[in-house]
Length: 296
Image (tube, rainbow, N blue to C red; front, side, top):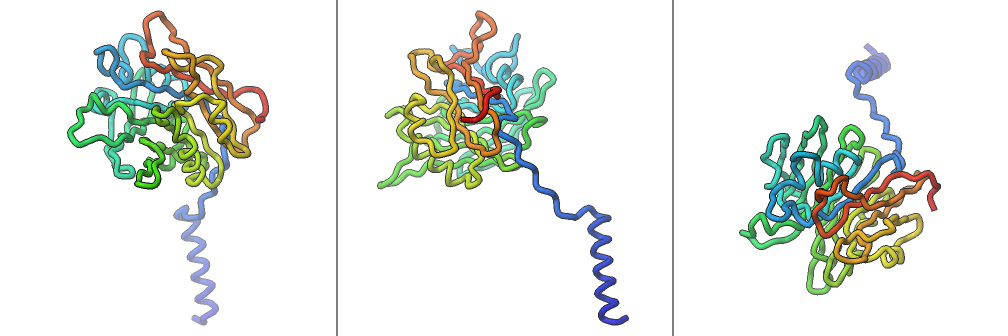
C-alpha cells in the first residue's frame, strides 16, 4: 500500500469512527435571555422559627416557606438559609457533601408534592470549630427547577480578608448555567450596612467576563445606593414597598446584566396566602418576573 493510499484509508476510518460513535464536536448552547427565567429571593433568618424547627424547608400541612417559593419560581436565592442538618436526612431529600473554596457544601435532590428541585447549599460564614448547628444560620443556598434551569457548574467565591484589605464576612454563591449565564446570591454585611456591596460587585465582574449574570439577595442598603455602583449595561429592579418587616427599608432586590435581553423584570414582595404566617423572618420574600417592557 502506498503512502498516499494509507493516508486516505486512515482519513476514511477517522471520519467513519466519528460518525459511528457520535464524537463530533458538540454545538455550543445558544444564549438564553435572562428574562426567560423567574426568580425569587428571601433572607430566611435561619431555618427555625419560634421554636418550631424545620418548617421553613419541610412541607407541613400546606406548603409554607421555601416549598412555596420553590414550587412557584424557576430559581430561588436564599440567605441565612439555616443549617443543612434541618433537612438533609429527611424523607424526600438525597444530599451529597462537597467542598467549595474550603467551605462545606451540599448538593441535594429534593422531592416534595410531586415536584423535584435541586438545592445548592454552602456554609458560607466562617465559624469557630464546635459552633452548634443552631448558630449556623448565615449560609447561602439556591433552589432551582432542573426541568427549566440547567446548571453546568457551581462554586463559592469566598471573601478576602487581610491586614490591608477586607471585602466582607460572606462571599458569593455562584451557579453557571449551560449557556454561560451566571447566577449569584449574596448577603452583604449588616454593620456597617452594605459596606461591602461595591467589593462584591467588583468580584462578580472579575468572575463573569461575558457580562451575562444575575445577582439576587440581601444587599443591606437601599437601591439608590447600589444603583450608583452599577456599570454600563447593568440593571437593578426592586419592589416599591419595604422588604424588611421591622423597618421601612428596601434591601432585597435583583441586579442583572445581559446584552441578549429584550425585556426587563417586575419586582414585588410576596404576600402570605393565608393569615397563618408562611414567611416568618425579618425579611419578606421578593419575586422577579419578566415584564412586557424593553430593557432600559
